[in-house]
Image 1 (cartoon, helix red, strand yellow):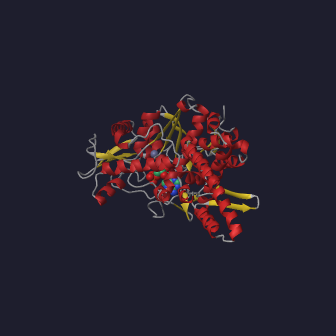
Image 2 (cartoon, helix red, strand yellow; image 1 turned 135 degrees about the horizontal axis):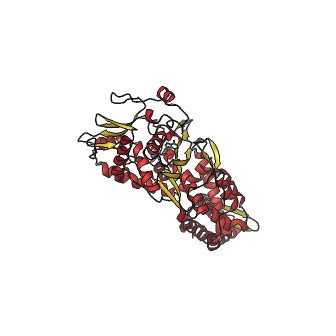
Image 3 (cartoon, helix red, strand yellow; image 1 turned 60 degrees about the horizontal axis):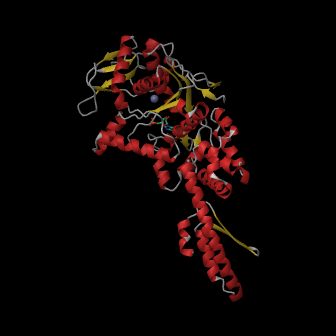
Length: 466
Ligand code: AMP
Ligand code: ZN
């Protein structure tokens, strides 16, 4: 059995991963707030944890991994968007949720086993809040319910390595008259008639943000589970608060064993975020013609615990690599055989070493001769760069193109023979430039003419030349 090592934020060490139950390895990842298109930064955790999900499925079996990623569909940003646009909240969240799934699907991300929506778990949140009040970890005040951080001083701040006092000094905490300690955070808050709200023991209201993940993780994964993931911007306060809620409501469990945090996608050294306005969406990039697999390749080329910049040069070089892979597979591969292979040991080992995706891509690049074509295809699929059906389409498009190019080679060589005797090369030149526009490389020498598709090759542009 492969030994997986992961860097655990909780212990600040790279540790051997030992699942609580190898028959059901459980992972929770914080998902998006659905009020707008996902920006490219939001896609980073999706791709990172998709790679981990694929690795876990490979090592423990695809029926033995449960991956949960939520949709936050109750949030003040959503309410604000509805007010600005005069639209129904439910329409905005349904539309944005589907956009998210479509965009992430294009990046090769498998859908998690469960994708709970916060609004479907309000009862469980209320129940958890009641438990916290009963156990003396929360209090109701002025229609709000707050978590009392002083009630769990021994645990609060452990993940991010800060004491409650440091946090008060460092964080922009909202001071409110109903808070006993400025660090106390909201579990429940009152809703006015124009805002979404649910009946509760504390009046009509809505949940604070953090409680949803605790309630949904408990419901779907239990009081203890293996891995909790998200971007490192969530470590404090979101993850710290999740831990406090879950550990205090369910002291019999320990919540997540391993905490994994991806570093941020940056723009000129600053986190890409909606609030800074320095973002572009995944959808924008796809619309501009950057294929999803190129975005995924660029992401995988940087380790998840390092900050990364998106650059156009990286995208061009990723596209060239992927084109080279498809070319090799189309020329020498057989996808039937490829499908029957197991993923490469070296690639599994690279991923098992705290998700060294960069090393995994290096392994792919080394599979560069005719004999490696099937292994290459197998591992491209394993890393989620192309699904089997995408590979089939790519490979057959390449092969069809080669067939067309073979007849164009004949046509061009006839034209050249004629031109050699008439000394009029205009038709040869016209055809050569049409081929180049379709991204076909043209090699001509004494022994003959050879045409091959190049990156960005467009078969539709060849039809008129036939
Ligand atoms: P949000 O909708 O802002 O709560 O973010 C959803 C997910 O995207 C969380 O896991 C965040 O940590 C992650 N995220 C947000 N911005 C970035 C970024 N610039 N780079 C990487 N991950 C990010
Ligand atoms: Zn969360």
